[in-house]
Image (tube, rainbow, N blue to C red; front, side, top):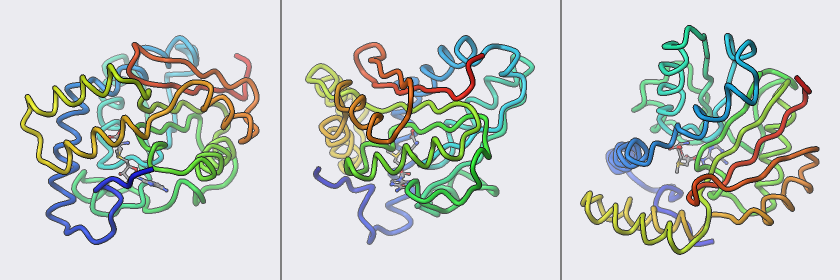
Length: 222
Ligand SMILES: C[S@@+](CC[C@H](N)C(=O)[O-])C[C@H]1O[C@@H](n2cnc3c(N)ncnc32)[C@H](O)[C@@H]1O
């Protein structure tokens, strides 16, 4: 449960901006959008993918939304992201004029406001109690699906992140946060228990290429 530099309230805007830029570099290297691209079309159905209203909870700079919007547009699909984060600096440096400053624990949206609610590498910033609230809230504001991606806690990923961050000469706070993130990651049985506590029926929890853990669940059957 060690806090990350990301979570410290007294960081300057310059420090915060530098960390988010570095995080984005690491994200691109690790292809953090790939689980979404490889799973969503088949899972939701290509016809449903033509237009999607998506909420990204803990969006940081909104890089995931930007990447996926461009990726979907190349397929002729129109995906519109709402990026929510507690950190206004992240939304600002990401150039997110429609970004919403708010908490995953109390989403400022009516029930069923989005087709899909996603979160990427955000859940590990929360306690177990907060994860349950976060997922209940995500389930409340989606009219169809939730898709949550985070880090799987294992020694191989820890070593890979350590090596990559050293080779990249990532700044010290990002390097330390990266390793803390893996230690704060999850195993499948932990997420299954939390999904049951959050009251999400039919939650599918699985491991993605040994590095990530995914939770997906739908309200609609087709
Ligand atoms: C490691 S960053 C991940 C950012 C982005 N989703 C990504 O995949 O790169 C974690 C983000 O979660 C945000 N965050 C942490 N706790 C939050 C909460 N309770 N509600 C909303 N956002 C939160 C942080 O401000 C930070 O931007």
